Image 1: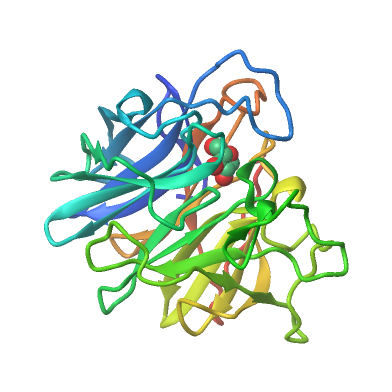
Image 2: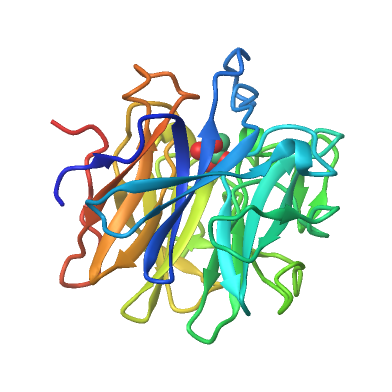
Length: 323
Ligand code: FUB
């Protein structure tokens, strides 16, 4: 599969998080809508209100829409904006993790539970204690331990926090300071709580120095994802205002990770967000762009393309805008 395939036409979908459950691909995207809110750097125009889950038996085959899996009106602590979610499975239950602004307009991360991968999911009464910011991605390591990666700058509010505490008038660091990192946290066995304090996901350059806040071409912005290939941990993410998906490699789930390069060059649209998954012996990049909506940044469409590795474990760069 050398050309990307758009996956659904009947609605706008973005930020696809993909997992293999019961031998099928399950896709957990954001559900983009036209809420009529003017575009701004805070992302207010991304005013999403529910999630649908999709599944596929094969990468070329039919994509099944399982309908509404979780609706904002059923979340007791909801304010607004259901952004990028992810899902995990443990002990016979499926868990949907989602960022949502609470009633004070602060992003928290919530969890909802189902007996089935496609939902419907029942949300807990409160967000996860100690959670903040956006874009949860949940990774199950080979020993069955689950880790959540999360965080996003600007509208994602990560700049409000230092050492897991909200600071007065949170600002981005100066250009020469270390970049604000994504966070990683081990999940409790019950999958509903953090088992520890979140830690920084440090990305190092070739000199083993943390990437700087002014290094917009390479530093973390949002859209954390992690996958394992040949025993190494690949942390991938969006650079936000420079619109690239990049990756860094580490030896364990906490890192540090060493910067490697670009997975996807900018797409049509402002945001870029993805997941990487192995299915039936091949690797795939799921991502989105705004081509079908004619470039509307808040109306995105998810797509998939095969991802290829070089012999030394690098990832071949994919062009975001195809010929
Ligand atoms: O879909 C809303 C937000 O846009 C996501 O949470 C970000 O990663 C960006 O894709």
